[in-house]
Image 1 (tube, rainbow, N blue to C red):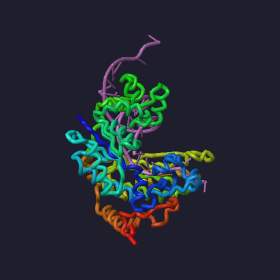
Image 2 (cartoon, rainbow, N blue to C red):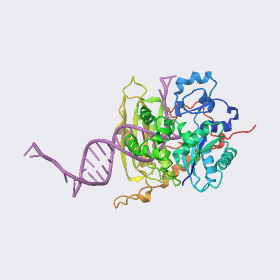
Image 3 (cartoon, helix red, strand yellow):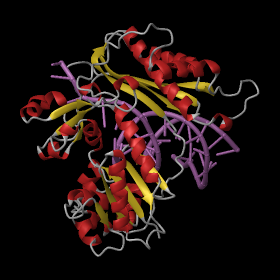
Image 4 (tube, rainbow, N blue to C red):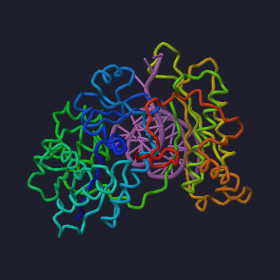
Length: 420
DNA sequence: TCTGGGGTCCTAGGACCC
DNA sequence: TCTGGGGTCCTAGGACCC
């Protein structure tokens, strides 16, 4: 029998910001998305004030000010670094673990049941807090889905003190009854709406449905979720993460773009970022998808959205080849006199170069050639974007400022915190 | 004025094969 | 008038996750 623990960092981005600004402790705090567009993280105090997830900042700006909420732009360098630290600590407690997202990690606790799991997890929790400053909650269950539910309840309950073990627990049914169906991992907005219309409102109700009905209404994915609720583990621990299949770089523009050259400049930067990313993974791409679109929120203007795929053959991660293909894609999607609000590129069909089909007439897939490597090294050493292909480095006019960003405390020498 | 970014998996339908 | 059966591959779109 398997036993899973799900460790989830409490209000992760907000907690990261508080480490270096202790004065923010116990005060309402929100973190905004790129371009300071909308709220993507909230401290408990901000949640209590009723600020919803995804709230557009411009609509809530005055509210937030009035209520004394601290507003910060997102600082991914900081969050990424602290995430690595938390994951490193967690991986030392069990031989098998899976990093599930920037702030979540599954541990396989099978074989640990001679211990009191609540006490063991309490110890893990204390270590993580002491060594990284990040508070976490831990849920334990016989399947990943049940450990998710346990985690959610552990966060809510004062009594739980951050840990809830639903493995062989007499409280399992009660826990499922107290979990709304839309809070079940794998049940999103559409499905919960449909389920509620059928009188299925809790995780407990969902667990009691018949297989055939679920299979018909929710497909094999939904059936898997129901089986997991029943205690049958269907979603395994992925402790050896598979290579990525796609890598995407996209941004919304602070100010919409209409001219070809601005768009070209943006797409060039996206292509550079994406190719650099797959070089880091040691992968080559077999295709690139370029997409540009207007704002779906602006109903006044003509809507336009277009994406196009350009094949890369032989597969490559060379920055010039990917740049060339990206611009070819842009030429095919671009139409003049349109207000573009968002653009991006997607590198697809990613493979390891050794897995490429050998071709008598074409060279071996290009992987980390000297020029690309020099390019990465320079940008790594002097800061991203120092050199760019085919354009003079200039301010990104299309990128609105992040007005409330804290320093990259842990990843840049010139932004280290200073003790006075 | 101002609404994130990056992923995965599944399914349905069309093109094409023998 | 009558028009098989079985399969693969690809793509677009829809669902979900954080």
